[in-house]
Image 1 (tube, rainbow, N blue to C red):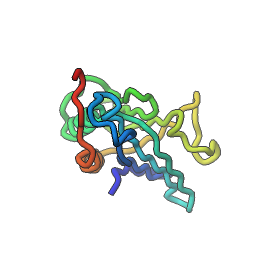
Image 2: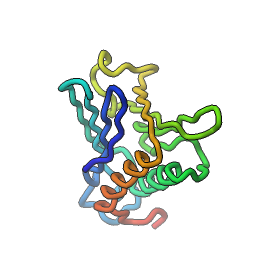
Image 3: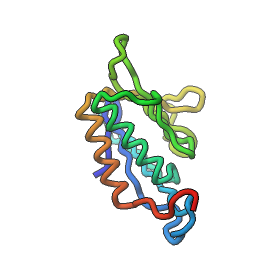
Length: 160
């Protein structure tokens, strides 16, 4: 089951579809590129859109999962955002005046942008979706991504 976030308009699902280069086992970069699947669905209608594209390295997604778990547990994080080498998906914290975590903004760029500007508005060619993410929602999202990543472990280590 894909990791999911829902707001008053959309359900965003994110999962790992596979390795970009499944036959390459010994090249640190190429062996570890993951194809990310993003689906966006209207919660009030039948509109659904899905895309798959190379989006993250195994260790980048692992770092993102750790970042999400830290946020869900209220632990401090080094940065208020998390992105990948392929700059198409970015997670950014939304904090209240007291510094407490209220939610996540998910920015979709380039190949990960839905084709319609009417249903999904964008600014500066970036779709930014905001989600209320209490600890249990963040933890469930991180667990979903971790379960997917477990099926596609890191193969060749960087620097080999």
